[in-house]
Length: 144
Image (cartoon, rainbow, N blue to C red; front, side, top):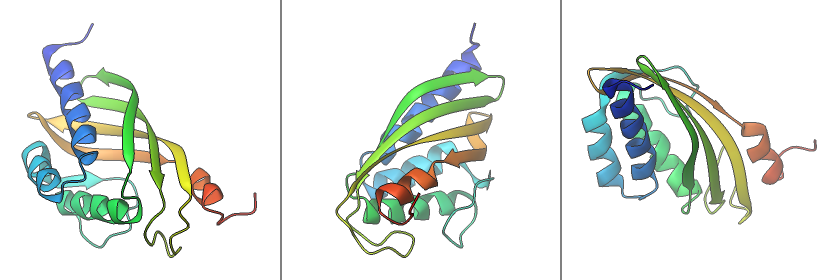
């Protein structure tokens, strides 16, 4: 059975994913400022030089430029203690440069799993596994 803290953390996880689907840079930035610690430890390689919460803002700006219709759907959500694990389905259409690849107009669908650790109701650490191989295959960047 979930504790009140676990339930609140799950709601924050869903809020984070939901706001990224708005594609509104100001709302995304404001929400990140509210729910993510400025010095959040991001344990997943990201394609930006920034660190902390600023890195999250820049990652979503890049993703939304490359995939203007990017949509993250939370498929499963599990909370235990100070961590929330989400299995997400991501869809989008490649309309801008992405990882050195010029736009292909191809649609992609891939899965990702993220773990957020919380302290005092804020995200303080993240780990993520993104199916980059599926992305690359669908965009024609790999032969396998």
